[in-house]
Structures are given as C-alpha cells and as structure tokens.
Length: 455
Image 1 (spheres, rainbow, N blue to C red):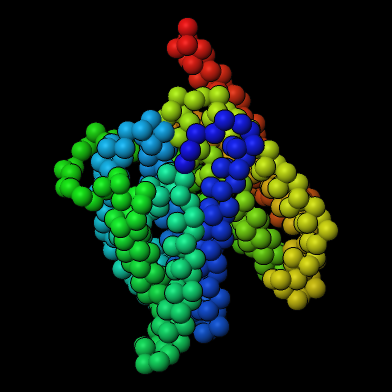
Image 2 (image 1 turned 45 degrees about the vertical axis):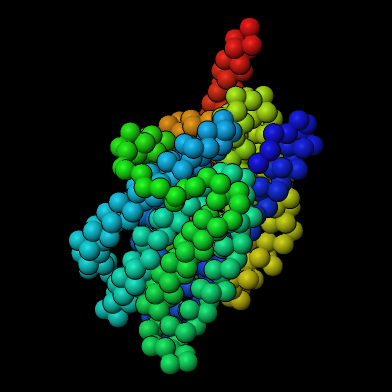
C-alpha cells in the first residue's frame, strides 16, 4: 500500500483494496450456500441437521473470529509507521492466541454440544446429523482461526487480492469435497450432512497451508520474516490484541445473534410468514456484503494513514468510503423496488410466500440505507483503534432499542411480523447516527493533535 496525494489516487487505491474483499466475502457466502444446498439435495433431514449445526456454529465463530480482526488495524498502523520488525512479532502472537482460542472452543464444544442439542426439540435423526456435522467441522477449527490471523496480515498490507485468490481457489475445492463426501463418490464414504463438515474442515486446512506458503515464499510478505525465528509468548501483546479485539468480537456477536433471536421469536407465526422472513433476510445478508467489504477496506486504509500520522488522509478515505456505500445502497434500493418479485422468485414458487417475501424485501431497502452508514463507520473507527463505542452501540441499537421495539410492534400492533423488521431498522439507524457523531469527534480530535504537533 502506498501514500496517496489526491482524492483521485485515494479512490483508485481504495477500489483496488475493496473489490478483492468484496469478491472474497461473496465467495465465503457461496461456500456456506453450497454446504446447505448440497446437503439438501441429499435428504431433508441432512439439510435440517446441517442448518441446525450451522446456526449454532456461525454466531460463535463470527464473534470469536471478530476478536482476531484486531490484527488488521494493528498491522496496518505498524506498516504505516514503517515498523516492519514489529509486524512479525505481532502476527506470531496473534497466531499463538488464535490456537488457544480454538482449543477453548473445542473444549467448550465437547462439554456443551450434547446438552444443547438434547434440549432442542429435534427429531433423533436430525439431532444426530447436526452433532456429526459439528464434530466433523471441529477438525478444521484450529487452522481456520490461524487463517483468520494470516488473512488479516495479508489484507492489512493492502494485498487483498491475495486473500481473494486463496478464497476463490478454495471455493471449487470445497464444492468438490462436498460432492465426494456427502454423496460418497469415487470410492469415498457416503457421509451425508456430516460430509459437508469434513469438506469444510479439509478446506480450512488447505487455505491455511496455501496462506503459509505465500507468506513465506512470496514478496512483499517474505520480507517481513514472519516465521523466520521463534518468538516466546508475550502476554502484553495478547492484552493489546484482546483490548481491541474483544469489543469487535462482541459487536459482531450482538449483530449476528440478534437475527437468530428474531427468527426464534417469529416461530409463533405461520409457516408462510417464517419462510418469507427467512428468504428476505437471506437476500438482505447477501446485499450486506457490500457495506461490510467497504468497512473492511476502510479499516486497512485508515489504519495505514493513522499509523503514518496522516490524519487528514485518513479522514478523506473515510468520507470517500461512506459516499461509495451510500451510492451503492441507493442503487441496491432501486433494484429491490423494481425487481423484488423477481428476487423473491429465486427462493420460492409458492404465490403466497412469493408475495410476502416481496413485502419483506421493501423493508430490506431501509436495512441497506442504515448499513451504508454504520458498517463503513465501524470500519473507519477500527482503523483508529476506537472500538469500545462500536461494541456499546451494537448492544444498544440491537438489544436495547431494536429487539424490544420490534417485539412490541409485532405483538401489540397490527404490524405483526413486520414489526420486528421496523424495530431492527430503528435500532440500526439510531446506532448509525451515534457512530457518525463519534467518527466526527475522533477526526476532530486527531486533527487538533496534528495541528499542535505542527506548531
């Protein structure tokens, strides 16, 4: 990543960092889609088992892996300050911490998985498949957590196309392993839904090995000598990683778990309503990849500029990213308004489900507008290493404003299921406005520091 001197140069550099992140996120989304789809073609029970296992795993993984996202601003600021020798030490400490976190997850899973599945009202066969899927997936948890650290290192240097290459390479491999292990092709065991878990685990090992090879053998990564020497454990560095990472992880956990909570609360509605809600929410999650990718790109470029003490450039990147996000949200909104019935038709042919899904998609439009503000601002604030306010606003906007308001509207007004969406949109909008105020405060504070340093 290079220093830029004009808005045009910044726009160009931001784009070249952003588009590989977007493709990477889409590919990761597709990987989960293939697991679900291919299990569904094997049998309805395997589809249900994989879906249950996934719903238990995803909030845990996204929350804990969010802690490791702190490596991106840490490395970006070190790179911006040209403290290259400190980069290797920080990355290795992140790898150590990721392994410990993975071992804790494995230990906790061994203790609580069976009791959790037993408490759920599931058919015996579905419960067995969910258990087997998660056990199979656990074989890849350690490399998955390590890969998250390595990807943060690659991305923090602005080389997001490398992460894109690794993910795009893994996507067809994951689909191939799914085909071989779910259906038992070419002499491989026929494992059904559990095969999807083993396929993911094998894929996690492969992408970690590929990442290690690239970091050790290719430039500019090899010049950092990440694995050229042994570093002892440094708990002070772990403290720095956790101090930044825990608020990020909790913020992501609050965000992902709220939708699981809403889905559970909506179980009292009829099947058509639940199916329509899930279809619209799935497409809204797909569209969220755009502001999320902009958020991740802003963490990199803002962290780089802050590390170099170029606070004016960091602010310019932030506003460029926000402008792109809002314009994309408007474009996505126009697509939703115009083609919402076509989008609903991707998920169903049932006329009642299709019509209700199209209505839910109108509310997804307002999700996009709020996400266009809050996600990029979160990314920019992480670049400044200002993460506590993001964590607090995730808690307040989703769980203190969004969910209670949604519950009230859904159960005590005529809005019914739409009430949950309105509540979440209101909470998200409130959080976005508060984060905007925080961003302006941080930028002014850094600007004042820069002016005093010049005097």
